[in-house]
Amino acid sequence: MTNCYFNDLQNITMCELKKASSDIEGAVAWINFKYYGPVFEELLNRGIKIKLLLNDDGNNRRYTDIINSLCERGAKIRMVRYSGIMHHKFCVIDKRICLFGSFNWTDNANLRNIEDLNVCDEPSLVYKYLLEFEALWELSKTDIRNLRNPMKCANCDMPLLNIMFMEQEGDDQTKIDVMQQCDCGQNIIYTDYFDISVYNNYLGTIEQFDDYIADVQQSGDEIYYKQLISQQDFARSSYLSTVRNNRMGCPIIHATGIKAWRNFYKDDGEWYYKIIWRERGTESYIGAEYDIMV
Ligand SMILES: [Zn+2]
Image 1 (cartoon, protein in one colour):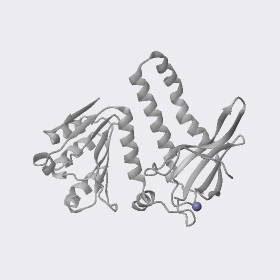
Image 2 (cartoon, rainbow, N blue to C red):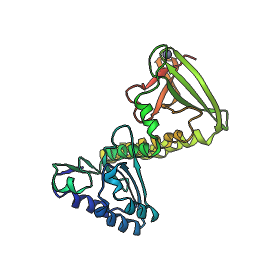
Image 3 (cartoon, rainbow, N blue to C red):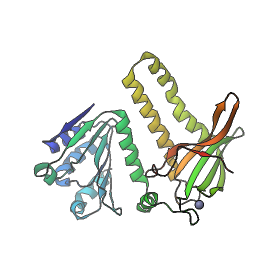
Image 4 (cartoon, rainbow, N blue to C red):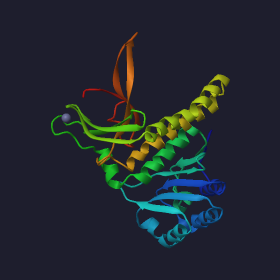
């Protein structure tokens, strides 16, 4: 369910923050730490993990002293500067509740502006915000710029995509290929072998939900079913996004895929590449599947 508010927004935000029982992850363009600093301090005293992204500018830098002291006490607070403003105003509490809307955590927004604030506990939405937070936390300014304006092929003028494919190789290895793809064709530009656990952990991440999902589907509990599907989706995306830490020699990996079988009729069919994860910002130029040309 989602509730929307138009008044008393600072109070509502602080009340929600104070209810946290494990962690807070927020990307909020501007925060007035004179007011929110004490709230964060109280949360840190209770052992709540705090991760915040702020826009890097003079408005936030006024509070550098408070921010530094919160960081010394365990909070992780980063000011980020992209080619545009980091204009988000969202926060996920305990991976369960999401606050979002036009409301910045400032005096102006609270007392003078016309703003909205939404408080949502719908897993499908909460997990999307969590993935957005993880992406912004893990990607650099250059990554974000390159993802928005991908390098183009000099020949066909289409984005030059680096897609990582993962498959089981024998009994104890995971084979990783990175394929570079544009309209001209496909090239394998990198191959490596990892422990089988890389592939098995991927399967495990998905399969741990399968039994529950099957049970809940039978019971007809639609809300719980949707929650599990969202949770599974989040777990898969979160696992696959670890490719940000090892980009196989590429400046960026745009997507991850596996070989899948497509049936035409009866026993006739063909293998194709099925995309199972897309990096943030690639939605407009990465397809759901690719033919195998090499
Ligand atoms: Zn090309």
